[in-house]
Image (cartoon, protein in one colour):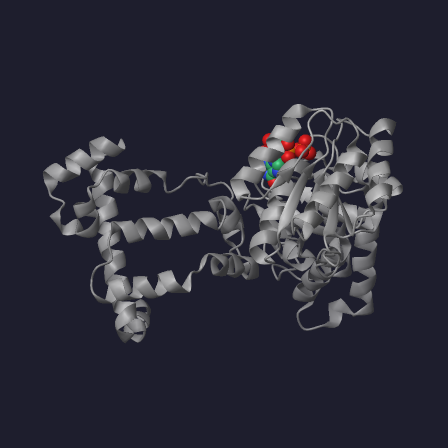
Length: 440
Ligand code: GDP
């Protein structure tokens, strides 16, 4: 996420981070570089200029040059301003109605349908709501099918009325259906077009007026940079929407949209989309995003994701198995599946402070566990529960079955043995012993 921008900002702030003496001249030079980095990331010119001016004023106001650690203070000012620019505090969505009606708007291809599903799934699992999805695209039957597929995936009901060409009527009927069937959230997916045009604006505005949603969200593809900002402005003029959803932040996005959009439309970014899967949705926290952009990682989000996958019951079972020396490859596989649920590897690595920068040129396979999983799948149940039975001929068979080599099978077995030993040690009050070992 934003690798290029992070890189350039890192270079720009290098001097200030204590790699040289700090003078008025190099503060000015640094800010020029920061501005250039922002412009390269497709941040609006005016915003970039204003940003560096504010940072400069604050630096002068706080007498940066005379403080003990001028570099760190400058980096902090840049971080605070970046946070401010992206919206300050995180803002949730309004779920006050019964049902609460959420209207999705945006261009075709921005990720509206995908996000509608993600949001329904999020509200269902995190907020224990009972959402209904409503398909209001009357032009593309494929769009209605797509929403049904999404609904099936997450087990959320989808309301549609194929053949009805009046989106306002469908939206209203959808809300009535929700009321009659005990749904307390209605998410209305609307039609988009490839570019802003009058017909689309009139249609969404009519739906908006007729259903008066608690929350109107504007979905935008972050890859489109400055265009994203212009589209947001056009939709906001008509809908006065409540919040922005930035999608496709998992791609090679330059960052301009994330940084500029809030100050152009004065509406918060509420969620981000970071992948095609239904779980790839994150609440947008400006401060955490600023940390990530400045290469400081985002440990808070990483821990949160880990906690989301943490299952106390499973953990207790696992503990018992380890204590009894029964930890096998099936358990190992389960652990891998939990890590995978946390998100794609590159994304996770980016959240570790410093690691994003270190690993930026390393090609991290999105499915880094593929080989390991294939090997485990090629084992018999016996071999999985008692790996010590795996002799040379079994290794050959497993390698063949999984399309790997005996060497790779050996490596996995070795890792597994090491891991089991470590787990055992940590269990038996050996945490201290481990620490001692690491120190030595
Ligand atoms: P709509 O026309 O606005 O409803 O857009 P769709 O929901 O159909 O999304 C268009 C394409 O973008 C689809 O191929 C989605 O899988 C993909 N997409 C949506 N959100 C994301 C995201 O956050 N990351 C990535 N990588 N792809 C996404």
